[in-house]
Image 1 (tube, rainbow, N blue to C red):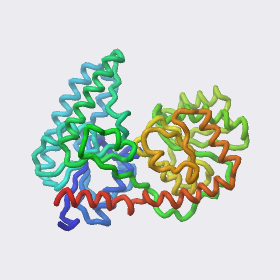
Image 2 (cartoon, rainbow, N blue to C red):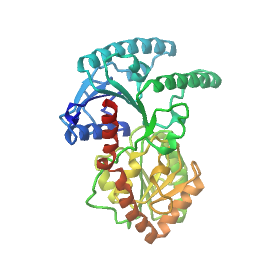
Image 3 (cartoon, one colour):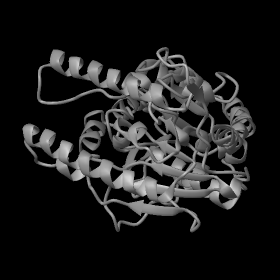
Length: 385
């Protein structure tokens, strides 16, 4: 079967947000359509009419059911949320089923959003593949206005239901070898890494500026609070260096924390920027302080720009990307003192910093999209055959 006859449908929430999942899907779908000749459709549920955040090939078809699950979470009493969720899910299943039966794809790919709960029951003739952009230990964690032991019970039941659906898939794809080992209940799981979105960077960081950079949402997951505490220790030894953070989300509490730590003069908490390449090239060290990840694309992108990273060994991703002491430094997850120590080490050893940056450029090439997509191409061909 030629690539031009392979029809793929992706199912996810949205493409208007600046998240890693949106970036990866936009990148992969465009490459499959433009370079390999696949017929690609992406089915969305959120905010029809909003512009896409990342570039997407004109050859990729986008269908938006405009169901808007996200809106039901705003200022809605918990019992009403449950009722609305069931009604929204019934509508979504009906609309997606009709669309798949109309399109008759060879393969339907679920990004494990709402559709994973029913996609295996849709009799459209397509093979079903799932891909997850989170690690197992931090997925399907129920958080609600209930006692902790009840939330834990619901989380376990929720995961049990997910496993039941994942077993029915033709293939389930995870992002890291580290996470692959966690899915012991499954025998249909494989690992395909995320690609980095930057390829063959023409200009790299010189690693000479006195700037450290971090990129990530201002949320608990990204650990910006841990980074600020570590930076307080770094700035005491290197007051002439500055930390630049870029990301979306609510910055207010982090700005207050920086003020409380007396680091506002050397720590700048910025909103997202569309000139992130320039910001990376202007910096000398990249820091990842996340408590958990799926596979952090931004880590690979920083390395592609020649920045040596200092990263927590959070689940999952950094251990698959960083070769400790060769192209970056790994830090015990959550260890603020060690994070500060490793940042100081690269600040104080410019020759090692530059050498690690050069190694990072070479090593990260294995995550270029032209080296990652062949794994997907092979999986799709094998699946339809």
